[in-house]
Amino acid sequence: MYVQISEDEITFLTEGDDPYDDDVVFKKLFHRNLKLLIVTEGSKGCRYYTKVCLLYQFEYDVTCLVGCTCVHRQRH
Image (cartoon, rainbow, N blue to C red):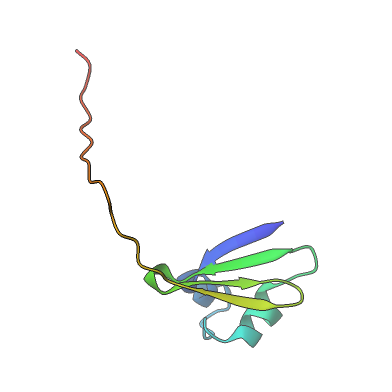
C-alpha cells in the first residue's frame, strides 16, 4: 500500500505540525502496513518515505518542444 499526500494535507492530518519535519511524518503518518509515503511539494519536488529510508527528488526543468491547443467542440 502507498499513499500520496501534499504538504497541506500533512499539516491538516498532524493538527498543525511542521510538514517539513521528517520525525513528525514518520511518527504520525507512517504505519506498519504502509510501504511508501510520497509527499508532493509542488514545483519544489517531492519526498519518498519507506520503512528504512527517506529520499528527496528535487524539481527539474522541462522544456516544451511542441505546443498545441486543444479545442472542445460540442456535437450538434
